[in-house]
Image (tube, rainbow, N blue to C red; front, side, top):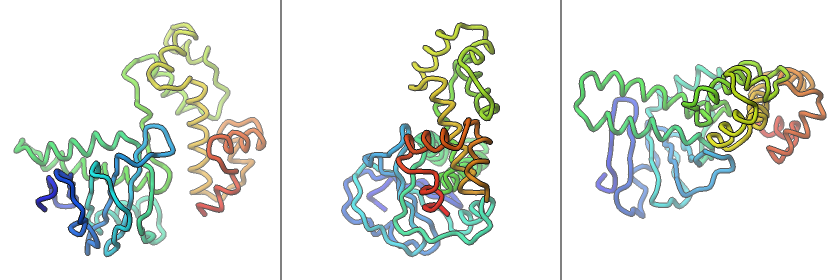
Length: 259
C-alpha cells in the first residue's frame, strides 16, 4: 500500500493517503472488513461534522474522493459485535452509505495512528481501547445517536451549564437558572457560551432536545405527542415547528425515512 501511511492493529487499520491515488482498488471490495472513508472535502449538513462513506465487505466504492481523506478498515466480526450491542436486528448492508460523524473522531483516529507508530509501554492496551471507542462512535453515528461532544468546554461555567442541560432538558430551563449554577451573571454566561460553542445556551438546549427526540423516534414505538412532552416541548405543534425548522422535514417524514 505504497499510496498510504498504514497503521494496522488486530481489529482495525487506518490508511492515510500520502500521494494522489487514482486507484482505490487496494481499499475496495474488502473480503472481511467494513470500509469507512472520511472525506474532509465533502461538506456536512451539520456544524462540526464530517461526511463518511461506509461500505460493507465485498462492496466497492463508486464515488470519486478528494486526496484529503482517512480510510478506516474495521474487521467484520469486531464491527458487527459492536453494532449488535445497539440493535438486535441483523446489520444492514452498506453500499456507499453516507453518514455524518462528529469531527471529534479525528482526535481518536490521530491518537490511534500515534500509538500505533510508537513503541510505548502497554500501547496494545491503549490501542485496543481506541479501537473499541472508534467502533462505537461510528455505530452510534449510523444509528443517529452519536455523542457529538459539542466541543465540550474546559471553561467550568460553560461545562456546568452543558451538564445541567443534558441532565434536565425535559424541564423548563432559563439562562438565569444556568448562570446561578456558577455564580456569574446571565450576560456573562451567554457571552462565554456563545464565544466557545458558537450558539447560545438556549439554542444548545434546543439542539439537545431535538437530538433526544430523534433518538426516541428511531428507537422506540412512542407517539409524537409523548416524545414532544418527554423532550421538554410545550406541545406537539411546538415540537413539530422546531423540528421542521432544524431538520427541513416534519417529524412524521423523519419517522417514515428511518423506520
